[in-house]
Length: 137
Image (cartoon, rainbow, N blue to C red; front, top):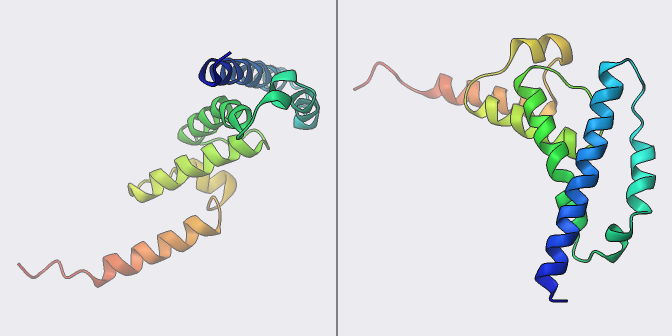
């Protein structure tokens, strides 16, 4: 089997597993259950396709659905899961919003500033804005 076909199969299987885990997490969150990512990690480590994958193809494809969910949650001003790819998506979306000059008041109220990186960026941006001379043409 050519490598590209095999890699496509691995990506497909990884995304399906991630979607299953996201669905489980959302279900647990919605109905008051306790989502445990450690259980998902065991399932990932025992997965045939993850063991056969090379060059982190499985890991990258698996992270995609979690990353998207994290970004979506950041836009809605919430943070629900402690999954590395989810947190990356959440942090990058908040970072993107900060760069665009918008920070959700709901995020600040609930989580404080998202992290020290964003706090430092906001201070640096404020300093740069203060340096601009708007009165000159």
